[in-house]
Length: 246
Image 1 (cartoon, helix red, strand yellow):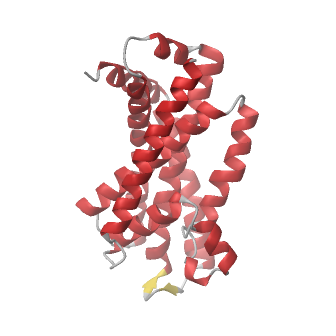
Image 2 (cartoon, one colour):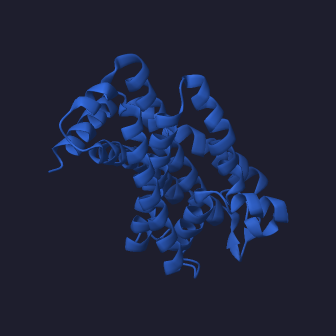
């Protein structure tokens, strides 16, 4: 029943294996630089909510880095569409269009696990205790699914790589800095809080940080909100794939 999704996922992961070293380096370097600049530079000796700033920062780096990797499938899908025409082969294959979305989403989730593992290692070197329990992995799965689907959504909308860069500049970059990844939103002006409330990263970061630090913020409403985002984005991606086919 899922032959199409499995085939797409297998193709993408085989390509990932060929560039795994580059992906590992890209996933490791950027969070390390943020960790040095904010964790050991600006935030040294400070605390947030009664915890060290490093404890606050590492979950934010995890959500930011995994978001970038999961959303990054948008560029690969565009290359498949515009240059190699692989996506056109998906469209003529005898399986439902939802399987294309499912296969690509699975690949995006897999990519997002790479920086997650790297930052878990960073936390050991930093001496920060993070709780990687079932609640965290459920929150992480929803987080990665959301940004994988956003990557598919962006890839179906844009017409060129220049358009992709514009989407990144107006969507991904603001989310990186305004969603509570580096600084608590409670200290931000009202206008920034209002903008942050529109970003899915705000809610996934809050939930993942709560599960990693075992605070009281990981309520069922946040899980339900992320589940709703996944369902809505999956449906929208399926519709856009059908529109591309037409």
